[in-house]
Length: 136
Image 1 (cartoon, rainbow, N blue to C red):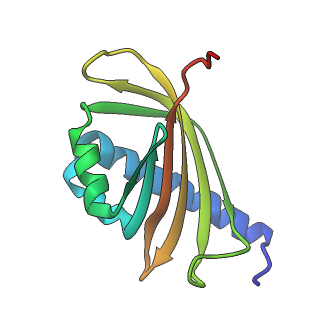
Image 2: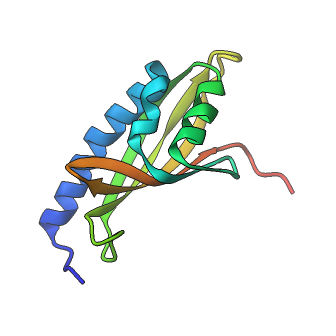
């Protein structure tokens, strides 16, 4: 097991900034390219609904209304236990999203588990949740 150092944490934070900039740019303006950001076996959990596989994830994202994401907070950390012995980071992004069909800003939270594969970052898991008030 590799030791997590302050340098590892700094690298995770720098990677999170670059990765999320690319991710949200593609989701908001070039969704046809999103499948390349996921592992072939990637998992997206969208407001509690699971989608497996990069091609199915891309189709799901293509079917969503046009969007605009604004990130308000971002955090990242390296993981002690990596995926397939590759560098692995956990990224937490929070912000607001506006969809074309309703033009109302909605707060969201998104968690990514990304892994380094052949010099590129790939999403292993992606959990997106709109932050709507809970009612029991």
